[in-house]
Length: 438
Image 1 (cartoon, one colour):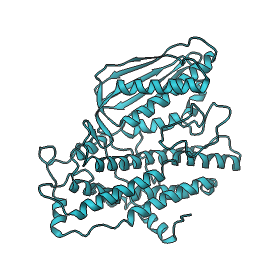
Image 2: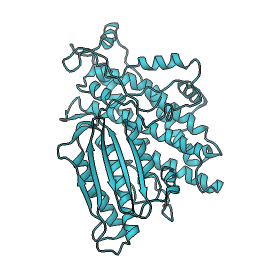
Image 3: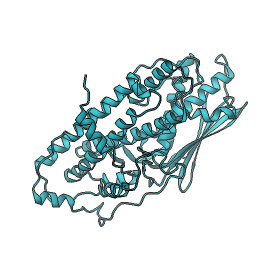
Image 4: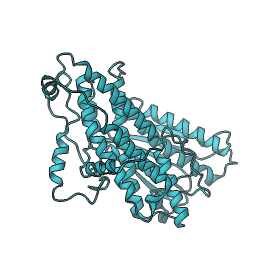
């Protein structure tokens, strides 16, 4: 069983004193448009500094939770995973480069045939308070400014000058780095369920019914940071693969022409299938989609399908439970997609009886669920992050809202008790919002 040494923990504490550097979707796309050996090496350099900082914040956070939560076996297990991943990145041996190669790496290349201009400015997400998801809320002090400036200097997104061949050591390092990231991604696959398991352990030991606001905001920060870490890792692995095979419309895991209608139809089909399976229905409630066929924008399709699937699953469940599983016909749930200048908004309207106003804040609380018996967590069920049972953990909405906010959107809910609920999913179509880590 791997355990961190005291020396490693000391290094982690040092890294945790630096702030994370947020990256926007547009920057990722402009940077990764033509990944070459030199450009990927620059990205590896950025990530080999940025990921340890983000991982260190998580190790620190997991060790400082209130009310004995840090002592739960599942929380300790996750803390060790983060520490081990931190160690693997910082101990990966780097190539020794000649002065000439170093200066070439620092010379920016030309972007998409145009001049080398620094990438588009980021915009602020109106749904997020400043510092709401910051990794270390208490460590922003007088001397933090220099660190923030240093962080801004670690430009992940400046393509390198690619006019000549690069030495083979660079390619070798890129491959080793991508392999390490794959290993880390696999290790962290079941973090969401393992942390949820830790909270269940804590609730049993402490005989708590609900989690308090301190733990709620820790989970928000923790899961938001996890989305960011997995986004950077997934993007880098995909860019490395795309040096050999280029997918049209894809830059890493970002699709520059994500078709909203296609993804909505797939999410509807999946949610109806899960609903039929769970309730033993011959046919799940019908879902009507109103969306232009050619509505495309730049997004991560995996994130969008996850949010839509979770939202629809909740709606269908409410409809079946409100009207009874033995009904022949159910009211239709409507999905309406509207396109504005800033946002693409998707409204999911159901007739599932609604939620009392007093219960609306609870909808955003982790581990809040209206299911009588929370299923015991099988750590393997969450391998893809996106496979979930019909109901049970009360994780669907809070985590979907984090996915929406991660790239400048939001998820809102308005309910009419006694009738139904409308969920509004706002997606930032300008793709210029930075990760909300500052």
